[in-house]
Image (cartoon, rainbow, N blue to C red):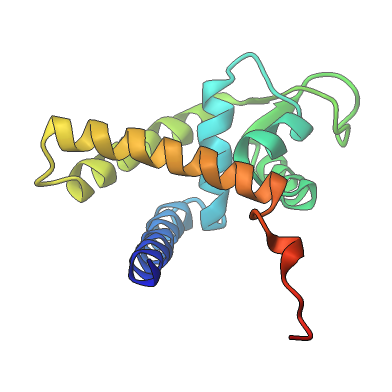
Length: 158
């Protein structure tokens, strides 16, 4: 069991590191931080606009990080806030034309990265992999919400 845990956790950590390296390299072109790529993907998907609070939930980022990113996006004229003032957390945020162009470019680059990373996988392997990943993520979400069974049964003094 430990071997499975180590393989799983090390592989996830390695993938996460490589993902961040790729995002950093791609976002460097635009003078933005690598993790901000995630916001482009979400904002592109919600063309009609999305609030910073919703963006925080969708991207699994804290509100302070979203706020910093949106400030950087505003300065670069990549987003507009619809009503509610320039700093309103409840104002829907949309990509500008410049922001959409960057998001489209990032999507193309992401598709290329995923295509290269998945080289050697059959369509069946890929389908099973993504289904499995979704199941594992759902189960991990439940564990984090409910805690591991028996966690309160452990006596740290023994």
